[in-house]
Length: 83
Image (cartoon, rainbow, N blue to C red; front, side):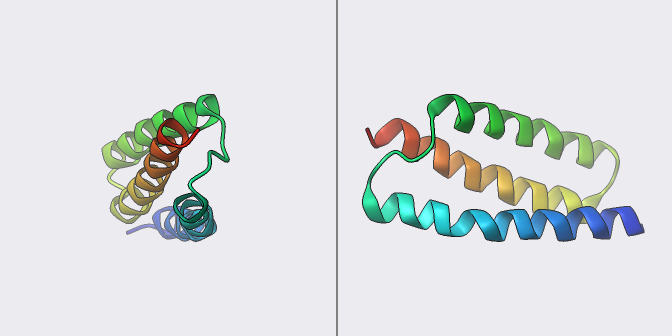
């Protein structure tokens, strides 16, 4: 475990924490709040980023990044389902 892994993990936790209200709000209002293009590109980029962190053996960052990718996947699903 390196200082870079801890720093990146901490930042990713903050990003994930910031997304939770948005995901909740989307399920609560049943409305599309993010464009499809934004949700799709961000989701794909986060999964690629997670893979890169995995190949660098940044375990904690990989876990945190995959959590954010999952939250963006939920936002993508909301964007597709809610019109």
